[in-house]
Length: 277
Image (tube, rainbow, N blue to C red; front, side, top):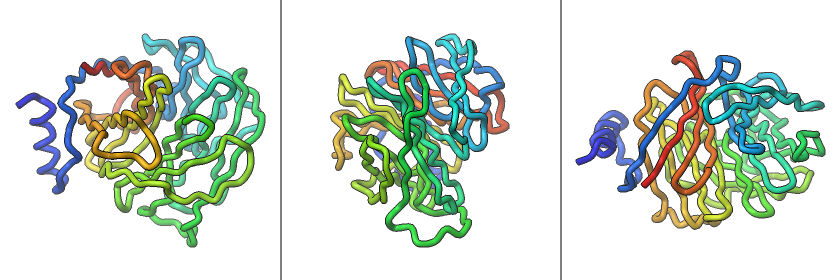
């Protein structure tokens, strides 16, 4: 029995339910501390070989640039935007998309996705609401929070962070400016809180990260991604990191995955590199 499977058994005993089947692939994880200035890193993309991130939940409206050595290089202001709760960033050949979609208490009516040029100029925005949401009263457990956004062909894919069921609804959104009243197109049985997503177009691989309320960190690999998705193909990894709260993912290749973890009072934010064999 390898280390990951022993850890999985411990997790099962702690949380009291059976986890999705763990991958048999070998995962090697390394990490570096990030600067304190990006202590709430949420979202991860690349630009000319360098990483882009930002701070969530009321942070500044700027993108921080750092390298694979976790050294901060500079920052870029994103003019005419507001950071209510920025949670993820994704890109295609023409645009960047920033998801201001965090909704911890289910009371927001102003979730949006900013559309930026490749030179980080605001071009337009997408506003969203949830068709099933009737109440906007503050509460801790509800299905109307989403922190994970990925570019998928001519659409965006938004994955929910559902503290009530701990599964993740999948929403599809056109990349055109406008308002979208969202309905789930599928639901993933992840049994944790999804915080980040990235799609690797060349291989058709979707990657997700998340954590359980008990603090266990997860990486999900969804090869041959489509909506709806055949979950029998999904690979699940328990990440042997603690303390941490992994918030963002970027897929360099199907065998090299980058992730960031915010500080959350647990120490310095970190950059992780996962190598999968």
